[in-house]
Structures are given as C-alpha cells and as structure tokens.
Length: 169
Image 1 (cartoon, helix red, strand yellow):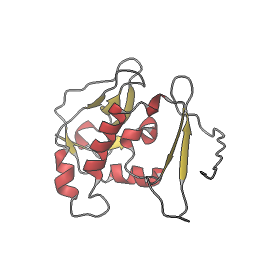
Image 2 (cartoon, helix red, strand yellow):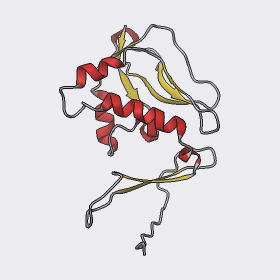
Image 3 (spheres, one colour):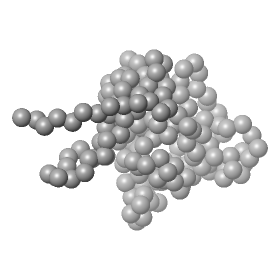
Image 4 (spheres, one colour):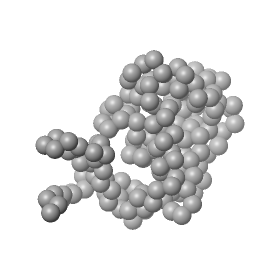
C-alpha cells in the first residue's frame, strides 16, 4: 500500500534528512513528497538506533489510529553506520518531482546525503559547524549553522556557540 512520510524531531536534525536549510522548509518538503510503497512488514529500530521518519498516520488511511510505523532509522554514531528505509518505490520521487523546481533535486539530495553521512566521520564530533554553501563570492554574506551534541550524540537545545572569524594571511 502507499504511505506518506513524517519527520521525527530527531530526523529534523539528522544530516541525511536535511533537504532544505530552514527547518520549516525541510518539513514542508518531506510533507509534500509523493507516497512510497510499504509491504506491511514492520521493522523497528532496536537499542540506540535512531528513528528519523515515521509513516504519517493522518495521511496514510490504512494505518490511521495505529502506533507510528518507523519509515527511516539509522544507527547511532560510531564505527558501523547504517540507514534503513522501511519501504520501496522511492525512485518515483525522482520521476514525479522532476518538473517541479521546488522539489526537482530531492531524490538526488536525499541519496547524496545518505552516501555522505555513511562515509563521513564528521558526525562523531560533538560540535558541528557548517555553512549554507561550499563557496562564496567576495563580500557575500555567509550563513553559519552550528549544532552541539551531548555525550550520547543527542542535540542540545539552546547551546551557546561562539564563532571567531579570522582573516587568512
């Protein structure tokens, strides 16, 4: 059957799930994605695995009024990483969204995020700083984002971060 996706609070902060810079835009993109196919076989994260997205019970008629079914979950930070997608047919996102400028690159961005996250060790750092673009023109404003994590790699709300920018000589 067809099912829709809804981000979990943890999924909103996970690099795999970031399809837009602003949280509101990111939630909106995930909300407007076409449905995926679900076989009805439920898998659930065990131990410290992190649930990043669930099936949207409000829009998936067949599972209304039931507990949330995990759609995407990941391993905790560590030497062995994985992403589990509890469904199939995501290739449809690429075909169905190609003509809509707002969503045309969602499929490529999502799977690019997965590959980068799986091979990158940056997520083992407890303070992560990133910008909205890789390169900037001289004089262009730079948007800097930061996230601080506790010893279990859960995001810390309202952490104070001080950034010092120095001119490279």
